[in-house]
Structure formats: structure tokens, C-alpha cells
Picture 1 (cartoon, rainbow, N blue to C red):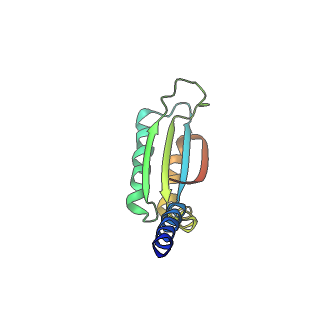
Picture 2 (picture 1 turned 180 degrees about the horizontal axis):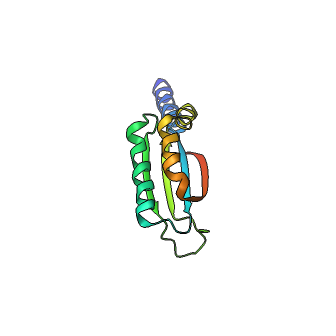
Picture 3 (picture 1 turned 120 degrees about the vertical axis):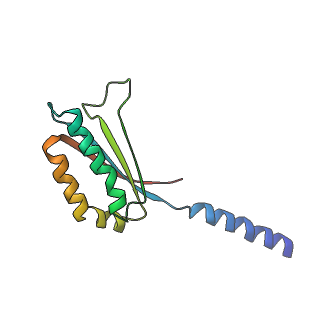
Length: 123
């Protein structure tokens, strides 16, 4: 009986650990650039965004890329950036951060549209 209780406790511990897996807050940003934005203009935006994780400690993960979907459903959006935060508080610190605001000034002249979606990722 004692052995069964220990096995049951171990199973419950494993189940608890699995249900307590760490969630990550994803911040997805997509850009559609204005007609007439040059390759150099777009590169300036890419480079400025790439610097944000070095400047804002709340950003725990970063990746980006350009659209290569054959489905033609992008509505003109060409760039996607994915930031990861540990918490909503981290995201809340990022949004008004001076370096994020400075990035917005680099982006502004070239931006036609932006789409932002946030979600909790479970692993």
C-alpha cells in the first residue's frame, strides 16, 4: 500500500509539472511598407528592429523573416517579427520603452500598415 501511494504521488507530481509548463507571451508584428520604400529604407527598419532585444531586457526571444507564402493571402504584408516575453508585465515595459518609441520613428516614414497579435504559447 505504501509503495502504491508513492507511485501515485510520483504520477501526480509528473502531471503537475506537465500542467505547470512555462507559457510564453508572443508578440507578433507584421509590416506592410509604403509604395516607394527602397530596399535601403526597409533594411534600415530591419536593422533597427534587430537592435531592440539588445536594448530592452524584457525581450526574451526574437526572430523575424519575410513572407514567402505561395498562397498570396498576405495583403501586402512582407515582414514579420516575433518577440517573446515571460509575462504581460514584460510586454507592458516594452511598449512604452524609449528604445521602442525610437524604433517607431525609424519605421514611421516607410510604414503603410501594421498588424499586431499577441498570444500565450503553450509548449
